[in-house]
Length: 158
Image 1 (cartoon, helix red, strand yellow):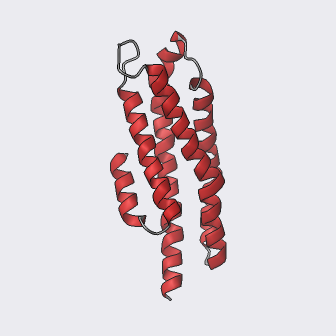
Image 2 (cartoon, one colour):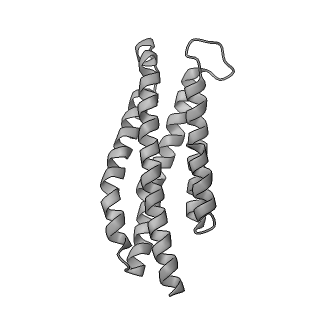
Image 3 (cartoon, one colour):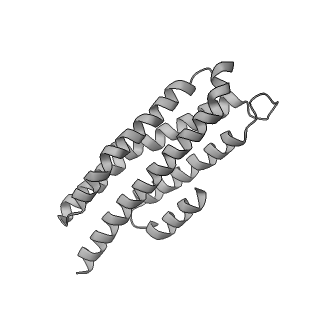
């Protein structure tokens, strides 16, 4: 996952400051995910598991919110300005991105608050599922960025 972020940053870095910042936030989210995945629920660690879960949830919700309420909209606005058909492509991705956002919100709702032992027992499986959700989300977001950037770059050059 982390390698894909670096590839995306190399590919689209500098295109828009907003995208650069968002890709940096994505990398931070992946780092939090990896730290949480590597944590041992019942061991004495420097950072308690509950704090790792809360940190991950906060970063994930910030990332998802930025995508849902800011980035997608700005990319769509730019696509509309170019009127090159990229809006239609992006609109095919947004419903699935909305579903994936909902799954992230569900994870957050279940784990952002106090976790009891029953919840902690489910955490590895739930974390694996949310990792798959995030990976699909990143792939769709990358498709949107690539399509909009490529289309706009070609239009600007033409």
